[in-house]
Length: 217
Picture (cartoon, rainbow, N blue to C red):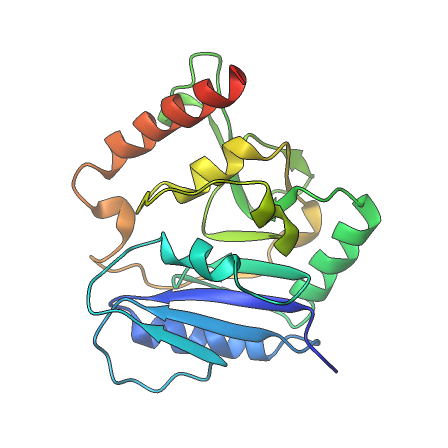
């Protein structure tokens, strides 16, 4: 059966995690193309369909470049510190997406409802919800959507906070209840992006920049 969904992954310094993430993708009950942007010089062998290697770390930006090129109807991005716990997660995402039938719908596992002041870290953050929640931002740990949304968004070379920019340009963002308890956290390590110096300030600036701009359009 020809895949209708592509997984887009990044590799930096957690190849052991990535092996487990890929196994959980391969265990899904539908075929999935796996595209990997490798920000490292690793010679590690990964079970992927397409691998793109870079000699420098371009962080999160390349996954949207890849998303603009995939040929499947759907795609998802998933970080290398989270994996699926069962084999029906992605088929359930597709079924839900078809049921809701909104082109620019993003599904996620974690997200944020912004307060009136748009202060990112003082806003309401959600993870692993038991009831479906509509949010302003779907965090980049897991984002599932139609490939056609790439015709609706603009992406400059924002190496981080890409999830905030994408979320600001699309109108429908949901953390569905059916994703409850269907992910497993992996070791983050010292390489985790949120540990990067200045990342907290960058997310606040991105929230103000992108959401204030979208509200005035």
